[in-house]
Image 1 (cartoon, rainbow, N blue to C red):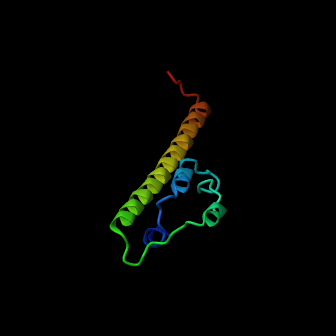
Image 2 (tube, helix red, strand yellow):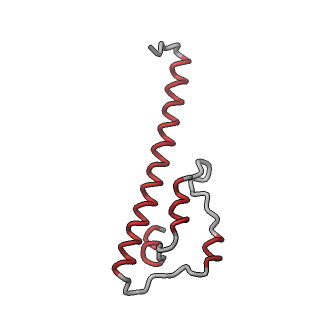
Length: 98
């Protein structure tokens, strides 16, 4: 999917899509984004076959931002789960928190 996005979709002007990855849903593991908005935009552009260096560069930056936001979500999700587990183990074995 990333390869298809990188090769075909032009991310310039899709800042709201990229920002939607700031709030990933922990049930679906996807951004809370209304994808029909892409169809309503009317300006969704595909990259040209030869590609423009600036568009290619901006696509790499956009993909990096999306990957980083996904990484941040999973790290915070795992941290939350670990903290809950530590708390439950402490209660179960009556460990002193001091």
